[in-house]
Image 1 (cartoon, helix red, strand yellow):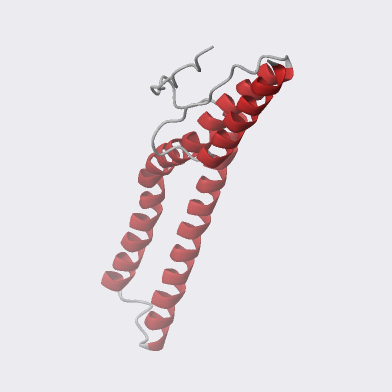
Image 2 (cartoon, rainbow, N blue to C red):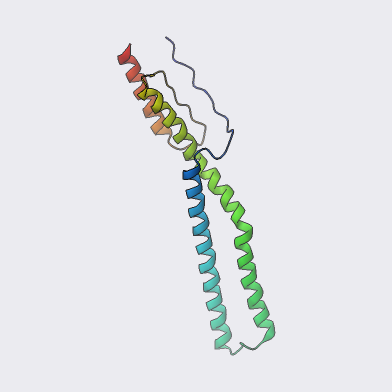
Length: 145
C-alpha cells in the first residue's frame, strides 16, 4: 500500500482552539495594559517631579500639556488593543492549529487506524512533534501489517 501524499492545509478559520487562543490573547492584553499603565505612571511621576522642582505646578500651559500627554497615552491603549488581539490570535494559531491536527491524528491511532500522516503549514509551530507522530504511525503501521 502506498503512503498517502501529505495534504496541504489552507487556513479556513483563525480560531481553532478557543480556550488556548483566548487565554493567550487575554494574557497579551493584560500585559499590554500593565505596560501602558506603568508607562503612564512613570511619565506622570517624571513630569510631576519636574513641575514640582521648577515650581510650575500652577502654570496652565504646562498643566494642559501634562493632561494632553496623559490622554494620548491612555488613548494609545484603546487604539492598540485591536492590534494586540489580532496579533495574539495570529501567533496562537501557529500553535493551536497543529495541536488540533496532532490531537486528531493521535485519536485515530488510539482507535487502531495507523494510516495517519500529519502535514503542517509553513510557519506552524510543533513541526518536530508532528514529524515524531508521523514516524510513530509509520512504525506502528509496519508492525500491524
